[in-house]
Image 1 (cartoon, rainbow, N blue to C red):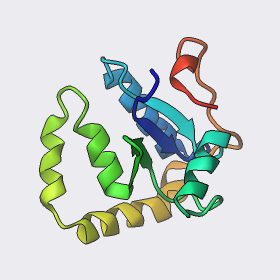
Image 2: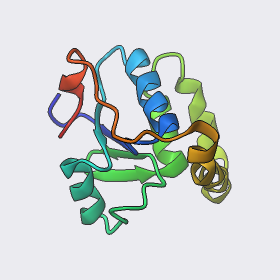
Image 3: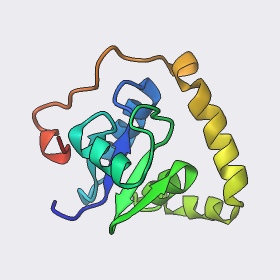
Image 4: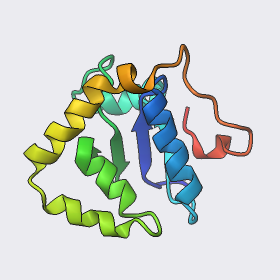
Length: 132
């Protein structure tokens, strides 16, 4: 799985963890790897791109040495999942509008969906998909 796209997510966010599980179930080609933003890998990517190492308000897609944030990252992931390729149509909506909606949900995600005390730990079968 070397050089596969990596999805970076807030490991204590219930919505983020559900999103990761959604992708895992639909990633039939085992295309994606995952890392929490709190992990060493996540922190390194955040640092390399001058992003906050403690304000985890974005789902990130790291692919081909490029970092896609917020709605663009989420839509690029969906577009690579079978039966979700149609979602690329939303990329035609101006980014500032997509990201405004994304940011509204991100600001309220803990209140609406809850928060875990610790990062989600994958099952032994799924561990190979996760970077430390």
